[in-house]
Image (tube, rainbow, N blue to C red):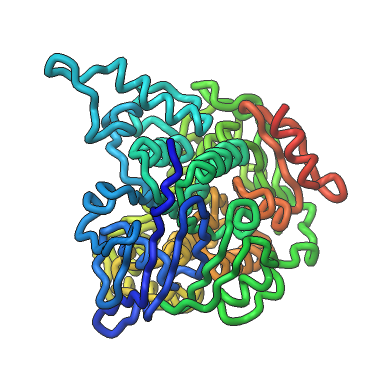
Length: 496
């Protein structure tokens, strides 16, 4: 593949106005061949709007673009792809009932004698997925993959287009460290060949590794542009949120957890061998982290504890052993905020207040009927308490990722749970909303709630947790706390 010397994108004074809202205000952006330009900003800053305009899925109100020296004004993603610009969305757009190979090569299935050549299709899909370290089979249905596996398929789809500019929207949000390293290696190789990238991420630790330049947006305007990726995170945070965030992680050292054991897990095993013989306790007021690489069994363990999946072994709350099943876990005070909030945590087509009401219908019912006034009152109360930006009657689909996560938390916190399990609680959430989620977790611990956090973000696990259990290949490799709770220690146990 030769370098695309003329493949420069120039965005000039692009604006996007909606009724009563300015989503973008005269933004300029240049992406040259073989460059990775990081696009930073809080949710609502305009990153997605700008990306969608470049990718052809949105039309600007004003402004112009050129690509490879020619006027560029795509009316659809197909027009953008045709000239070599592709976008990988944070919300995956896969066909769940097709195979991995069919998804990677969708629209470009190789034909032989009027029929799809399954062997050729699988071979070509595997070539791209191998570059990402994908461990699954080409014949697997996409719906049976983990979130991380589905993300790898989405990335491979874009690579198969042989695009000259790729827009990556939170591409590592569902990936572990090994998969992230593989992706970065692929980006570096493609960059050396002249492919350029617009890289959207909330993980500031990634920016120094991957970015050649940084562009910061806030409230639809371009705030600053840095000529290299070596910018202190604190400076980027100030530019993104318009104020200093003094401490991203709450001070969890005080008060210390009590001696009271709230959650006790003994010899938990999966009937499908996803995890085996997992045991641990979580105390009142403790943040208990679960770390490990993707595929270690972290999500499977917490889903079993929450009653969502079958298991052997025992789960007890305040000394009382639970019967199997989601309803029994909820009644005992265990709630789960899942990693895929849109598919498993929310009904995105319904309102904020209706989502909050669903697990609380027992307290909202009068003589067998749900009282609409109580639903609205509860939605208003929870929204105000958690700082959810949006009217209680607004659809959840209209909210940012951070506000959607607050809705999921709010609907369960109204039940005053004893154990809150958070699976990837800040995936795809900007730095300001992330800090708010962390403060909410700290408030739960002060009230004596036991909190279990699963995260692929090592900095998050270390910054939040009192103790961390490290999983590898479905088994606990040890518990770390105090001076032993360090990044090298976690990585060493996670990779045994």
